[in-house]
Image 1 (cartoon, one colour):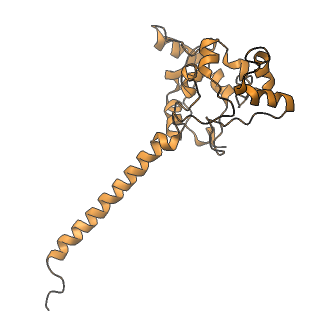
Image 2 (cartoon, one colour):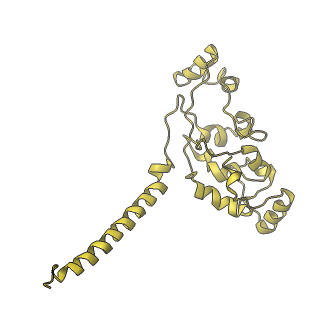
Image 3 (cartoon, rainbow, N blue to C red):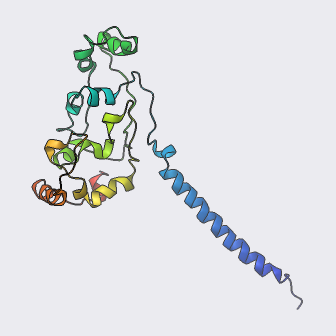
Length: 216
């Protein structure tokens, strides 16, 4: 029986199969890289806000504690967005006529809250509790970065699941005394390892990687 296919067909078939596998792997690698890129995670992206609030000015320059604005961070799942009355405690006297702060004054007059754009916004299927992290000795800077150096707030981390899991698998590395939770410039002492081990015992810190920890 005469040969139906030319001998070169075997070579073409092998090249096609391996070429297809190569392009599939390359495509998946590009998708994975894009998924971790700042374009997708919005790291360092400054979102436009109704009022250009500067953490750099309020935290670093003026020394205002996080809890002055985020009043529920120690007791509730949400850190809380301050009501306009909190802003007006100062701005009824300071920069009281600034055009930039007119949205704040209008909100105070009308009673309608300012519509801030959330920067650290997790998906609805993820449960995150600020209070438990504070009680366990996790500082604000671990998730939010050095907000005291941010003229305009932006994400410092990807906030993807793999990023969360890095901490949940080995949380002891991130521990600090509760008295230093809100201290952006806290530095570990020389006996940092001993301190963290002690804090882990005192705060009952354990590795938590069960799915139901965050997905409820």
